[in-house]
Length: 292
Image (cartoon, rainbow, N blue to C red; front, side, top):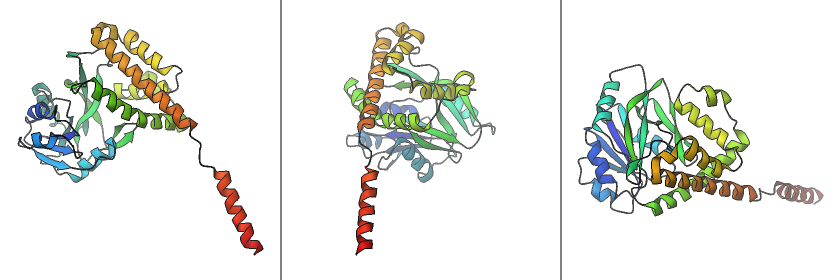
């Protein structure tokens, strides 16, 4: 058996169905970032444990959770409130635990948007680290999200999980991604200054995860990124095959990309600290001190 962590913040519309899907496990832990809505109240109606911890970042929240919140089992699964565990995925997870070869498993998400699955424009199958040994995996921050660090070999599961990305409405989606774009802009600026494109992984990466991350690093350096992203998702990935939902998704992603571009520009316009002024002031004070 494995334990399930559920990360929450103001998820009163999503937490009940998420918990009901997670109760296939005998150990479910809700890690809440001090929600101001009825999330904790609703969660308390279920046979789960609830802990609260102030949110710092996605990576730090996950690492704190893994290190400080005990579980009944060594293997854990991370479930977001707008995601669901399925019976088929749960069964495959149990089967995966029988092997000692891997310390973690990636699982592909099925993005559910406007009441349907949109497989084409969401780069399906798009994998996330979900099932792992809690003593072998931790998380670092990357932009608004996180990236896993694994002490051992990993593998991929065949079953997928549904991810209801706009279950709380378009206004909530836009507000959330406006916040996300600020962190993404900071990470983009850092990557442009310090990072580089790994061409080997971009074209010959051993997994979808490696290729996708190299593609992201490459895309940060493209001109007209919002337009390029729309064209890539809608035409090259086949978003037009996902109907109205696909067109809406591609448009929103291009809008999100444009927010990042604008905030990168804004950060670049900010004046750096005037080191020369500070040095001149220190030098002048030293001279005055010496002359006296």
